[in-house]
Image 1 (cartoon, rainbow, N blue to C red):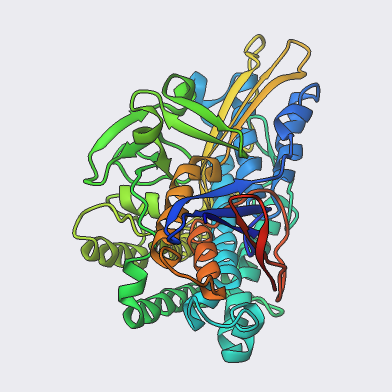
Image 2 (image 1 turned 30 degrees about the vertical axis):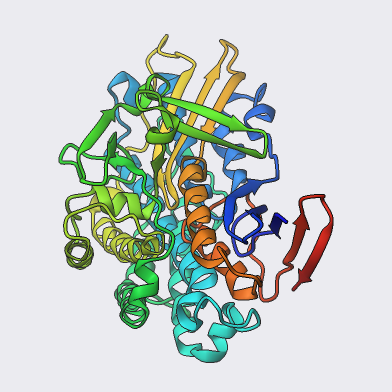
Length: 488
C-alpha cells in the first residue's frame, strides 16, 4: 500500500510551505516536493502606483531582507529616470557607499538571525534532538553568554541600518539618482566605538569570528553526517566584479558549474534573453532556468554557498583566510553540500563586518554630493535592479508610462532561483532518512526541515516564531484514507 507523508507547515523559515513525501509499498521514497502554498501578489498590486513609490512599497515584501528590495527598487529607478547603470551612469561615490553600507549591515543582521535563531539549534543539539530543545530557548538555556553575544551582534547590524536608512526597518533613504542623507561623524563614531549598550565594531568582528568557530566545532564533531546530508547538484550564480569576485551591490551575473567553469556571464539588464520561468500546478513559486540549457540542467543555486563557490577571493583579511580554508576543504571544486550553506553564511557575516569597518573609515560618507539630477528628456520608463541579497541574487524590473505610473513589474527573488535546488535536497534527504523505514519518527521529519532551512528560504515576509511551532503530519494511503497522524 503506497503512503503519502505531509509536513505542514515547515517551521522556522520565512513564510509557509509544506512537504509531501510519497512512499511505495516497501516504504521507499517515490517522490518528495516542497509545496509553496501562499500567494502575495506584489507584482500586480504595485501596478498603477507612481514609480517613485516602488522602493518604499516593495520592500514590504520582507521583514528581514527589506534593504535588498529597497536597493533593487532604487537601482531600477536610477535606470528609469535616465541616470542609471543602464545608461552608463553611476550614482555619486557618497550615494553608492551609503547604499553599500546599508546593504552590508543588512547582510550581517539577516545572516546572524538565520544562523543563530533558525539553524544553530540543530547544530548545537543534533537533528534528532527533542523539539522542545532545538530552538532559541534551548540555546539560551545551554549557553546564555553565546546567545547574548549573538543578539548583541544582530543589534549592532540593526543600529547600522537605522544610521543609514533612518529606521531599523523599511527605511526611506535611497531615491532615484542617489540617497537623501549621508552619515554624520556622530553616527560613524557611535558605530565604531559603541555606547549605551551598543557593542563596538571591533567587538562585532570578534563575535563574528566566534560564530565561525561555532561552525568549525560542530563540523569537526559531526563531519560525516554534515558532509553527506542533502547533496543537491546545481549551477552557481552571483554578481561578480571584473576580476570574477563576488560584488554584493553591482556587477555581471556569472553562472559556473561544479568545476567552477563559467558557463554563462551577462549584463543583468539582459536577463530576459537568458532566463525563463516554469510553473507547476502544485506550487505558487516559479522555477527559473537558463534557456540555453533547459529546465533540468539550467536551474541555478544562489546565496552564500553559490557566492563562496564562485568568488576567487575576498578583499578583507579575516574573511579571506576563512574562504581559503573553505576552498581547500572542497579541493577547488564547487561545494554541493546543503549544510555547508551555514559555513558560507558565517564567512559572510565576518566579511560584512570587515567591509563595514572599511566603509566607516572612508571620508566619502560625510560628503554632500548625494544625488545625480537627470537631464531633460532622459526619462525612459524602464529599469532593472539586481543585488546580492542575503539569500542570493534578487532582481526587480519595472516599466512605467509617460505619466510615471507603473505598468508592469517582475520580481525574481533568491528563493525562487533556489526552488529546484531545494526540491532536489528534499528528495535526497527523504531517500536517505525515510526510505525503507517502517516508522516515521520526529527526527526524520525534522531532517526534511533542516534540508530546507539550510537555504534560509523566504517564502513571504512571515515573522519568526519563538519556541514550539505547530507541525501536523498525516500518512495517507492510496485510497486517500488517513492511516496515521501526529501533531506537535
